[in-house]
Image (cartoon, rainbow, N blue to C red; front, side, top):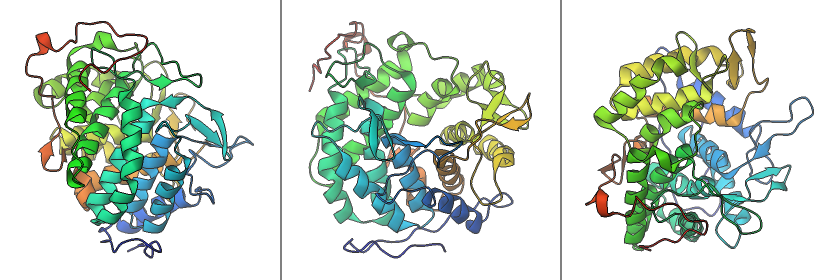
Length: 386
């Protein structure tokens, strides 16, 4: 249902079953949500955050663009998904990065963010396991390889990955917990992709292990962004924190970020909940074995669904209005991916639980005391093991 014709020239691919969440969303609902993304896709294939709102055009960034492409695939919209990947491959810079932002095809923030570069590995792995199209993965392998090398060029001796390389080539002086948690999952996907294509990269796996250890055990390695809910749940969603540690982490700030009957706040000190953060928390809960809690939260956030299948970005519950006043593609994408995670309709649904049959979870660092994590970050990061 809702499947696009195969992209011309692509290898034969299997079309996934469109997910549904019984009693919440039907397959037709999921397709309608994905179609709301397609309506905002630019002729180039780029997917902005939102269409022009109050005269302000939406911007494009590589991370949210990949997330949207994954959602399109889940909904069976293979043509738009492939156009999204083709555009991203063509927009990659020689150093393996992408600009942080484009607006209407023009670069507005040229710095290269590490988590944005790395996320292409998640998208390509998701496309491969969902469609079985290895020819596509081989075509995208040089793109993934360059992006991961760019990302690891920002890894410090301790193991965290600095968040951006600025336009002039200088690296940021700090790392972000949410970004590094996402990069951990990206590196696991990149390692699996490399092995699948006969191009093993054991040094990437070592880098992932070190990064995962720092995320799980060294909060001092990261800039203080604790007011953002993503810093709360992303170590669970990305995989470095699972099991009892994850349950403790989620319980510690549940009442800070989750508003009964409405969803998950974006930030702790503002009275608004967002569908994207809520659905990411849904996926984090499910990944840690709490499907009932995940389903309850997913059901709750449906108050942000628009009649055309798109989703309002958020709800300001003191003023009783949608805030900000847009319906965003990344929000629609998070809803589609969360629905798939809850019901396991496509092979890609397990991407937050396991990669190539290996469960995501705490990194295996043989001797944390001797791993170098006590070293301070350096201004010009050096990858000591790579």
